Length: 127
Image (tube, rainbow, N blue to C red; front, side, top):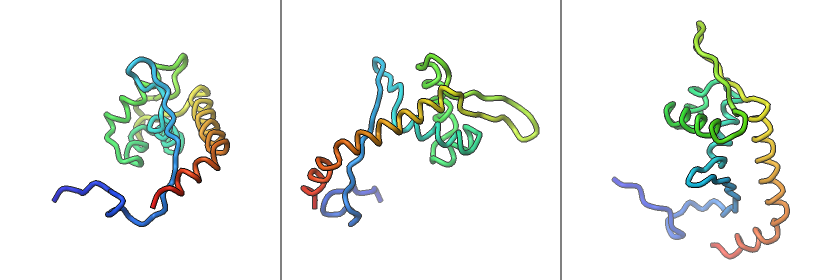
C-alpha cells in the first residue's frame, strides 16, 4: 500500500515547527547543506563514513559521494580517510571540517534567534 502524503487532515498531531534549511550552492551543486553537515557530524561521532551512513539511514555509496562532493567543493577537505587495518579504515573531520560544522550551526542558531517572534507568528497560523 503506498504511503499517503501528510496533509493537515492526516498529519500526526505533533505541533508544527519552523526550521531553517541553509544551503550554499555553487552552480547546480549544493556545496554545503543540512544533509552534508549532519553527515559530517555523524562521521565525527563514529569515526567512519560507513558507520555514519548507517546511523543516518543512507547507503555507503551515497555517503561517500556526499563527502567527496563536499571535499571537492572546499578549499581544504572536510574529511580525511585512512584505509585498511584489522578493523577497517578510519575517517575523521579535519580542522576545516570542524570549522564548517561549527560555523553552519552558529548561523542556524543566530538566524533562529533573530527571527524567533516571526517564526512563532508564522507557526501560529497553522492548525
